[in-house]
Image (tube, rainbow over all chains, first blue to last red; front, side):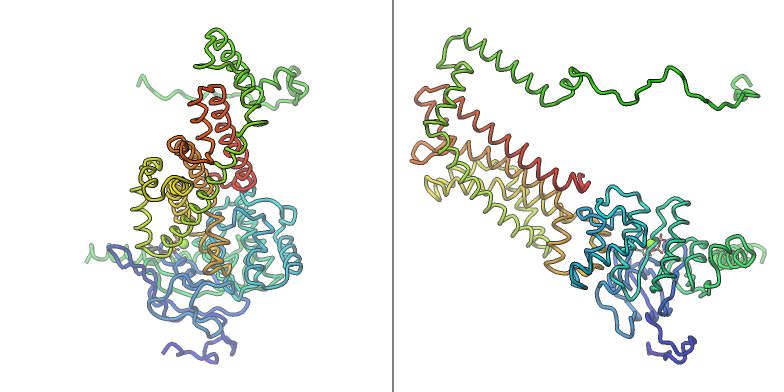
Length: 279
Length: 293
Ligand SMILES: Nc1ncnc2c1ncn2[C@@H]1O[C@H](COP(=O)(O)OP(=O)(O)OP(=O)(O)O)[C@@H](O)[C@H]1O
Ligand SMILES: [Mg+2]
């Protein structure tokens, strides 16, 4: 039964999860192979969570996110948003991608933020305009509203994408390594801005990364996945850490612990290999 | 030991340069002189070439003194003016453009239909690629004899060959434009809530617009050349001929200056459409959006 856990049992003080992923198995069929991306992954995301999926490259983080977004139907298990199984992509699960080409090049910055609002007739034009402008101000791009995306830097494009996603006030915001292609300085600035934005708006976000530090800084809860195929390795709280804590003993300890979790397999494999040689 | 790595020199002084060199150019932006500005202007240079060519033409034809074979430029200009003001040139041009626009429009509609079928089914994709592979290498004008057999002398046959020259170029480019829209952009559109017709109209078409525009340009170029060629072949028996017929008719009457005037009109219209109409569409869209290639 997929409803093994009821809200009362789920260990969150009786609050029902917003998004419940249960026994999720994802596979790709190619011409010659059946690739299993994730194997029986389960987790729960609550309202206001900054939920991080952390794992090595190829462990199926993007696949999980695509499945939540509705692009990749599960082979096994289920994904439920507020109790309703996910069937197709929709603006209640806006996604921010890693690539810079996710903005519509034929629309200005403002036009891009307005786009989902108008397509979905969320509000009338006047209201939508005010709303979009307010969000652009929040990501510090209000001076660029009439500029076309090709004239923006990479970091600015990602901020527009975030503003566009937030404008729809999605139930969950999905972010697939949104800062991975940025330089270290811009990246840190964007992480800080994202958390500041969260303090203001309190949205729910699922954030994919393969940087431990980013996971600790951005996340309130971290799901650590094993290498290919992705399985749950651990689930960790990181809500107590902030940017001030970088370099503090608590931060470094957790950093080392997560590092240990991620590379445990390699250590085990090495231990097995050496053990075999000696035995 | 002979090719040992050279050691770095020891004790090189550091330096900070202040104030900057005295002989550096004072005014960073200097207005260009009149000569520099004129020679920098593409239009001016081309105009100069035109003037040289025209003078050469005038000189050679005066020297040849055989208006039947090679009329002087001034005679051609006069003939052009005469044909526009008192003659049938405008009427002929209008007829040509009318036929062309009808053919172009039907060609575009069919291209849209073919592309829709090609994007929505796999067999449709195969159908389109087979047909384009077959018909693209075939010059549309080669179908004129067949068209005459089927539709007789008249606009219908012309429209048939024009459709043929537009359809494949546009369908091929549009389809390849659709298939090369990046997966990220597609997914971004879908998370924004686009589905069905809205997805095509608001995402696929604008995203593929550079390819579509290329198709339109190629289609136009094919159509215009095909039309003039077709009118030359059979304009003789149709009462309301086009521009090609104007050229043919004047050749028969040995009005060589008017033949040149007709050719000049063909060039003029081709240039206007290609470098005024299409160029400004390009500037207002894909150049502005930074979507060129
Ligand atoms: N379209 C596809 N077709 C076939 N296999 C795929 C496809 N997309 C992903 N995979 C496979 O699924 C596995 C998981 O891929 P996924 O992109 O989800 O990994 P990831 O955790 O996001 O990695 P990264 O951190 O490098 O982005 C990989 O082994 C990959 O080879
Ligand atoms: Mg990925």
